[in-house]
Length: 273
Image (cartoon, rainbow, N blue to C red):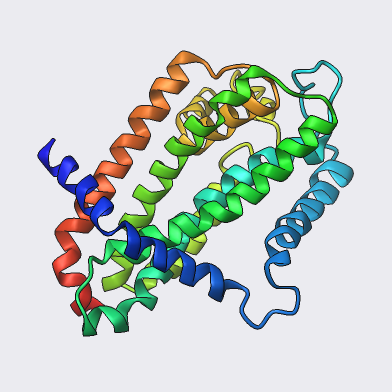
């Protein structure tokens, strides 16, 4: 308990430095670009268009009917999950680059190595706010709105905690073994297709009778989170209670493990970098 309290106290103590790293990353992200911050909107929309054409138009994946009883748009259904995935992918993979780029500065002056990692995660939240803002605006226009939306900040906090925990573990390993960047790139490619992001979860559930081992799919944290977000913004209902408990336990556990591992290795990180 004291370790966790100490962790929260350290983060609060260096909140200004974490904010500076976030600000630096946001300023440098589109530096020299002609369209600048417009890319934060163009990039996810371009990805959404590509997946919509391939999986919605060509492969004809059909989403379940939304909570308002009429909406059945594959691009919107897809966008709800892509925004969730983008947060996890950017925070977890970005943590490795954030720590490496702070290496020269860490060798000159002292500051806690977690500052650039958390600063990077904070910068990703800016992109997440844009994507979810656009998603909710679209859902408002098509009249798919419900009280379940109030749970969205809670889900985002749990998902961010999970993502930061994974990012801290990856950043720590990558400081010593640079192959981790490439390994993580491959693993995250597999994780993307291991969850119902570009396809309806019902496609997998339909295979359970023939392949009972596939039920392990329901315990994939990414699957549980993606479906929970869709429950809230698409189905307009609360996630099941057992899924909520599962998400709280998994998020807190992964964040605790990631933070503890990172802090125990932090004394060696400056030398590794």
